[in-house]
Amino acid sequence: MTTLCTVPAKLILSGEHSVLYDCPAISMAIDLPTHCLSTYTLSRHPSVTIELVNYQQKHCLPFAQWKQLSVGIESRFHLFETQSGAIQSVLSKPLDLILTILHHFDHHYGLMRADWQFKIDSKAPMGRGLGSSAAVIIAVLKSLIHHQRLDVQPAELLALAQLIECRQHGRSSGIDPTTLIHGGLLQYQPKHPIEQLDKHTLHGWLIDTGHPESSTGHCVQTVKQNHALRTELWQAFKTTTHQIAQAWSHQNSQHLKQGIRQNHQLLTQIGVVPQRVQDFIAALENDMDAGAKICGAGSVEGESAGIVLCLSDLPPVKLCRQYGYTLIDLNTGSRAAQSGAYCEVV
Image 1 (spheres, rainbow, N blue to C red):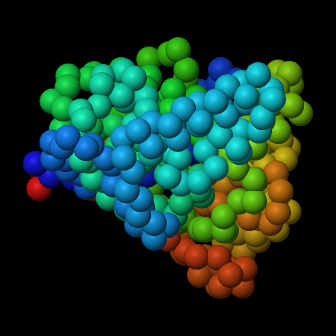
Image 2: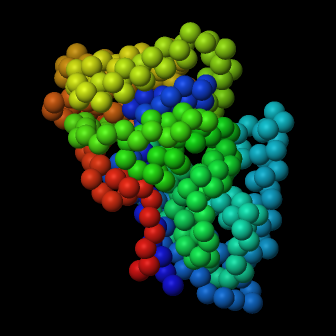
C-alpha cells in the first residue's frame, strides 16, 4: 500500500512568541502543502529510505544505523535541556528531523520492521515561518499511523508532534501542529480549548524576504533571555490579538490592518524584525496603506526574516521588485487548508 499525506502550511496573524507566555494567538492554515508519499515492504533486513525533494537528498539507512543516529540526536537535546549545548546543534541537518520522528513513533507505538520509503516534498518555502517543520512532522506521523492502522486521536497526535517539535525549536507552543491538524482559522492558547473562528476571505499576499540567519530555536531563546519577565509587553500582545480577533469577527478591514501594524511594532520591540525588513514594512504602510508583519519567529541576526504578511488592496509588486523579494498569492481554499491534514491511498 502506498499513501499520500497532505498537510497545509500555517500563517500566524497574531501571537508568535507571545503564545509561549500564556497569551492567545490566531493562526490560519493556507495552501502551500507538504506531501509525504510512503510505502513499506516486510523484510528480514529492515531499512528506511528517505527522499527530501526540497534538499535534493536521498538517504538509505539500515534500522540499526538510523536508530543509532537518533540516539545521538536525543543526547544532543539532553545537552540543550541541561544548558550544555545549543538548540541549533540538536537537529543539525534536514535528515535529523525525520530520524527523530521515527525514533519517537517507534518509542510510542513500535515501528514495524520493514523496508520503509518516504518521499517528502513541500510547496512552502522552507524555514520561513510557515510551519514547514511541523508540516513534515505531521505528514510523516500520519503516514505511519495510516500504514500501521492505529487509532490515534488528534490530541494524542498533537502531544507527540509537540514532543518532536521541541527538538527543532527548543520549546513548542503547539500552535503550528494544532493549526495543521485542524485546518481553518483558529484562536489558540496553551491549556485552553481550541476556538475555531468563522471563515472569511483574507485579501493579502505573502512576501518572502529570504531565509532568516537565526533559527526559530535561537530566536525563541534570545527573546526569552531578554524579555521573558516583561509582563506589560506580553499583555500588549494579548490586547492586540483580541483586537485582531474582533476585527476579523466583524470583517472590519481597517481595524484588522491596524491590529497587524500594532503587532508588527511589538515584534520590532522584542528584536526579531531586522532593520531592512522594518524599512520594507514601513514602505508598505506608507505607499500601499498596508498592514504588514512577519509571520514566524523572525530573526535576531542578518537582514532577512522569512515571510511577511501584507494586507493591502493591490499586490506590492513594485516594492517587492525594489527589495528583491518574492511575492506569493495567499490562498486558503484547498481541502487541507480548510479541514486539516489528511491521508489517502494512491
